[in-house]
Every structure is written in structure tokens, then in C-alpha cells.
Length: 221
Image (cartoon, rainbow, N blue to C red; front, top):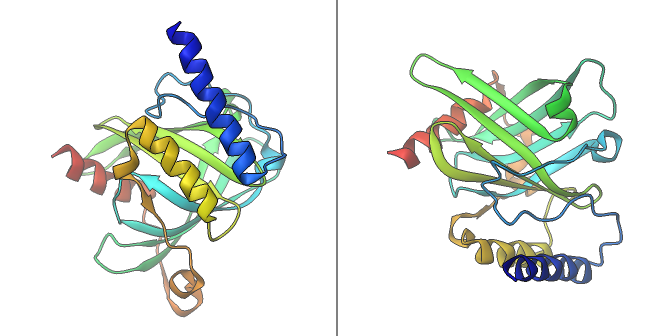
């Protein structure tokens, strides 16, 4: 009976998504019931469909250490997947443009939407695992994750559009409210006024791990 209730709930979530946003593309997976996602079973990704630029629209936890994140995904790979990132870092208290490339081996994990990152620094070591748990390649992608040094769940919402629609925001808020994370999300500013890098000098690549460590340690303590 409990399993039936869960199935009905997930079915309603999916129907609301499709009706509210008039999405007609093929749904590759269902929204997870547990966005900590440690045990979430992923599926093989369609890299050509996911290729192009994705804009970070929202994230959990609510930490303002990074803004204007966009990720460029290639259509093809050889032996490794190179993701090009551009964002504004606030690790030093002011916006600084960062451009970097994160590389993953094109192995069984990556091919199935699991991205493992390891960092060994002078003051801290950590690993972060992200999983693609829901995607409509022309519209939106949900990525959840977890870090080795913090129990706080991670969630990133990427949009094909620079400015996410209000309908999508309302849909995501409804889902996060039901999951108990509505108070933790931050909606990111992707406006040209803030994110135009042409008038700001780019700095050397600051690993995205440095930003992850900032909020992980602050929340853990």
C-alpha cells in the first residue's frame, strides 16, 4: 500500500510537470524521491542530446559563493569528457570571472550520468559525487549529489534558457517543498547585467572544489 501511494505521488509530480510546462520531449527518468541520491540508480546518458550550454538556475544548499555558472557539454568524446565551466566566484568577497575545464574519464560511471570528483588540498580533502537524475535535454536537467565531508544534500537545476521561467520555478518549489528542502534553495542570477564577462578580467582557474569546500566546511561546523 505504501509503495502504491509513492507511485501515485510520483505519477502526479510527472503529470504536473508535463501539463504545466507543455513538455512534449521524451522524459528520460523520473524525479527522485530522495534527492540525497546516494542510492539513486542512474541511466545511460544521451550525450549528443545534452550537448551545448546549460545555465545553472538554482541550487541547494543556499550558499552565495558562485554565480552565473554555465556549463558547455560536447557532443562527442574520445577517452574523456571535458566540461567547460564559466562562473563568477565570490570566494574572496567580490565577483571574479573563472573559466576552467573539468575532465572525467569516459568510463561506465560517466556514461551513466555519475560524476566523481576528488580533491586533496593542504587543508582539506574531499570527494563529491553528482548524478543526473532527471533530464529533458531541450529544457531542464536535475543533478543531485553528496560530499564526503558533509551530510548536506546537493542539488543543481540547469536550464537551457538563461532566465528560468516562473512556471519552472513554481514546479521546482513544489517538489522541494514536498521533499523538505524548499528553504534551502537559492535561485541564481543569470542576467546579462551581472554575468557579462566582457567587462571583467578573467582570473586563473579556481577549482570548483575550493568553492565546494567553503560551504561544506561552513555548514559542517
